[in-house]
Length: 147
Image 1 (cartoon, rainbow, N blue to C red):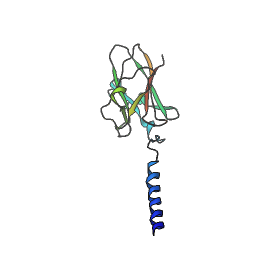
Image 2: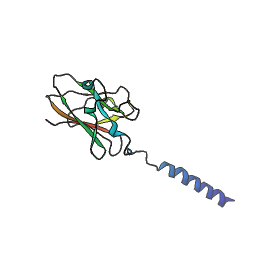
Image 3: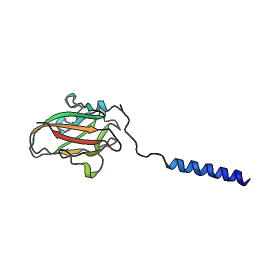
Image 4: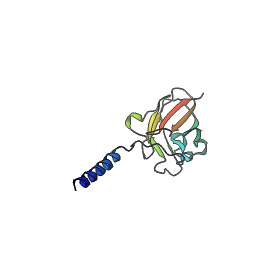
């Protein structure tokens, strides 16, 4: 009888500890509709404008280009599909990620509602806005100046 209890106890402990060993970091699934995202903001009256539709420029990195005027005013923006679908409505992930600077990689939350990023260009030019869904953790938003 003790052997049976010991065996059952061992099996139960094995099940408990194997459940603790699962990986809690999830990788973004490919082809989640990211090719349906637009750069939306004050410059497009928050509309899903075809000229700001994102294109995949590298594996799971989507981007578009836009001309901006440096007049000292910030541009509010986010990435979202045509219908503001949950999971495809990407704004900042936390307060430390609101302001995007050239060359920074800010964390995004694609379940956001009103979490708009802010970018203030220091000079007039063409900028590439991108969102990277590759790897682990939150998607990363970045901006680089093209011209």
